[in-house]
Structure formats: C-alpha cells, structure tokens
Image 1 (tube, rainbow, N blue to C red):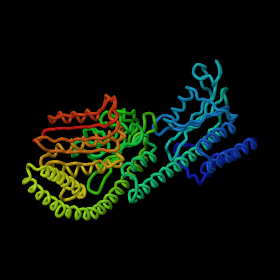
Image 2 (image 1 turned 120 degrees about the horizontal axis):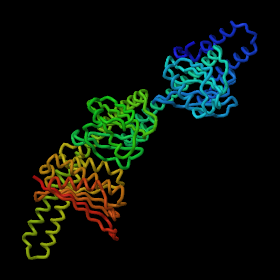
Image 3 (image 1 turned 180 degrees about the horizontal axis):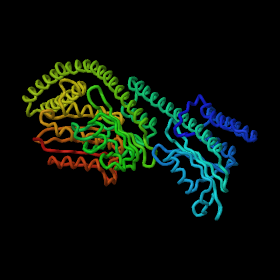
Image 4 (image 1 turned 180 degrees about the vertical axis):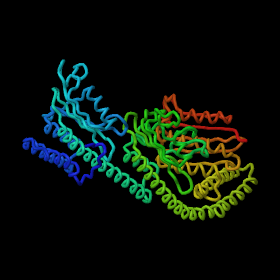
Length: 569
C-alpha cells in the first residue's frame, strides 16, 4: 500500500479501511482478539475524521490511537508548512502526555517528506548524544513512519517510536498507513473549511464595500477599502498608492496598520518599485519575502521590517487608478496563490465599486453645480456690477471733496466695496467648484484640495485669491503650491489645535506668495520636520524661500504663519 499515491473521498472511509481489513481476515494465525481490537480501534479513529472536532484534536487522537493499536510508547504527526519546512506538529506518549522530537527522528521525517515511502526500521542507533529518548549505550530502538498524503501530495508524516527493538510487521505498517490516510482526509477537510471561510470573508468584504460606497453617508472610499482588505487578508499594513505628478511619482494616499502615521502622504519614484510594476502591467504581484527581493522595492520597508507582500492593481474602466500594497511583518506566514487570487478578485470588485460611486457622485455634482453656476452667474452679472457701479459713483463724489473730511470717509467706503467685490469673486469660484467651466487650473486645484482636507481639519479654512493666478502661475508650480497647502493644513490638523485657519494666494510684483495662518498652539520647540524641509527645498529650487513664524514657547496669542514665496516667470 502506497499512501502517497492514494486519493480519498472523505465520504467513503471504506477506501481507507478495506485493504487492512482484508489483509487481516485472510490470516488464520489465532490472533482474532488482537485483530478484532485493532479493527475496532481503527474504526473508532476513522469516526474522528467525520466528527465536528478541531484539526489539532483530531490529529492528537489519531496519534494516540496509533500508539495504542501498535503498542508504541510514543508517536507523532507533523504537517509540512506551505512556506517550506515543518508547520503544526503533534507528539504524544502512549499515556497521552506530550513529548518532543529528537534530531535523529527529525532526519527520518525529512527523508519521509522528501521521498514519500514508508520507513520501517528494526534498529536505530541509540546514541544518547543524538537522541537520548531512543535508549542508552548499547540499546537499540525501532522506528515506523509513513507519509500523510492529500490527493497525491505529501502534506505530513505519521511516525511511531519504540525505545527497545520491536518486531514490526507488514500489518503494523498497513495499520499506521490507514491512520495516515485518515489524517490526510482530516487535513483536507480542515483546509477546505478554512478556504471556504476565507472566501466567505472576502465575499462579505466585497459586499460591504459596495454597500458603503453607494450609501449616502458611507465612509471615505479608499480608507474603507484599505481597512477591509487588512482585516480579511490578515495583513499588518495596507497602503493605497496613487499616481502623482503626472505619473512621475507614486503617493501613499491612504495607509492603515503599522507605520501608517509615518508613511501616509509620502511620495516615492515609480522606477523599480513593486507598485510601479503593477501599474504598468495591470497584474497582481506576489513577493514571498520582500527582504530577499532585490529587484523590486516596497516603500514601506524603509519604516517597517516586512516579510510577505501582495501588490494589487485597482483597474478602472479606462486605466489603472492605483495599487493596493498588502503586507505582513517579517516572520509571518506567506501569502499563498489562493490568497492572491481572492485578493485580486476583491480589488477588481473594489475598483468597480469606486467607478459606480464616482459616477453617482459625478451626477450629483453636476446637478449641484448647475444650481451653483446659476447663483454665481447672478452674483457676477447683477450683484457685483451694481456694487461696482455704486463704488464708481461714490468715488466720483469723493473726488469733489478732497479737503472735506467727508471725502475721506467716502474713500474708505469705496475701499470696503472693493474688498467686498473681491470676496464675492472668491465666493463665485467656490460656488462653481473645481469642475466649473469658469474655474482656472490653480484656483480649481486649491479648492479641490481644501475640500478634500476639510473633514480631517475639523474646520472650514478661509480662502483669499488675489491677482491673475491662473494666468501667471505655470503648471509646474501648481504642484508645489498644492504640496505647501497640503503640508500646512496637515500640520494644523495634527498639532495646532486651531479654531481658525486662513489661506491666501497672491500673484503680484513678479512673485507668487502662499500664506497659511492659524490661531493654534504654534510649533513650540519642534526642531525636525521632514515635511517643512521638503517645502523649503521646493522653494529654494525655484529661487524662493520659506518662512515659518511661531512663538516659541507659545505665547498667549499662539498661532503659526507659514509664508512660501517664489518668483514668477
């Protein structure tokens, strides 16, 4: 009987039991009581397989039954790990007490796993320096081991040990082979059950994504995807990576798990990165051990020691929206091909749900924008023009009262009207939104960014645009401006505890000035900030400067003022 080449149906235990029964019944050696006892014990052990018991309990009971049926003082069952080497192991004595494996037996088990053929040894070296459990000097021990197979694949070994020499027969070998086949069925049932549970978890996560993204008050989409993916994949960290700067860089837009606070919002080059490979090929990528992969880099490894990693594409209707980096810490079990398949299906479902959510949001924005555009048009065509006309009239009257104090008052009123017109124009840009037809590149980008960060900030920043920003500011400077505003507002959200925040963009005198101010706690004694250092370097690269003013230690007024200035062409 060769258990390595046998496939079993868990519903048909006769396949397992019948060969041994037939062999014993053909014998007429008078040992009917022994045969009857062994047969009863074998059937009882096989009933464990179809019982509703956890796999470790079933394996331990099978080892105990093998020891009792053969008279072996101890035995063990070892499962092969999918990652290589040995995984779960059970070693017990005849009385059910736990025991450990020795180095000599380990060599025999390695041989069994590599060459799945039964090993039956009448005598094994009993040198106490190698394996004291097999006897003292001059004594011998016996070993009987068979492979545990599932559908032709070796998944483990079952072995028995005798400290003194034992007469091992073919019946003993067939008996333990039958129990090994039962163990294989138990392992297969457990793995099928675990796979079914994992698939159910992935399906529930996909359903939850669709429900949340299509709900009116659902969570932020990318953060929802990252959180659910980390849970169902058993991962330690998940990063949502999106193309940045026209695809020249990748930015970690959302991060969950270990290192999330440090890596969220950071950018890195596309070249040689695993995420860049996935975005180019549109195919998932599995890294068994990121520390051993010198060809592709995972940005999170600069902060956390990672082991297995999956990188999944978020494939939209027309292009790849981004990538999902799913990671476990070094030393944890690897992701399997089945994990990669289920995670890929999940990411495809998530991308489709994002497309549906975007379409719904786009439809709602169009409806809202049409109404806002009407309001903005009325403000521009009626309110602004009437205020402007009133201002001209007042200015004309003030010019006739040069030496009269009333003329100075009228001039002050004209200035107030000019400021009112400027604020109304800013409100018009806000009403039209980032996709309004009258909105320029810089203004729309700033409005969109501020709207994105308002929820995390906890307050609505005031915006002030001055000068022909959309005309004078080139496209390459827009990315720098957005980086300045993102870093400034992020710092306010994390550290300032502010109640008011203002943003002012001014283009005049050949310079662009971006100013952020808040009434928070200030920067205090903080001496290191990689984010501010990056903003300062951006300014220097364009011949400008960054100035950060904050009382240290904070005074009663508190607050911080960040001023980023660069020359305009």
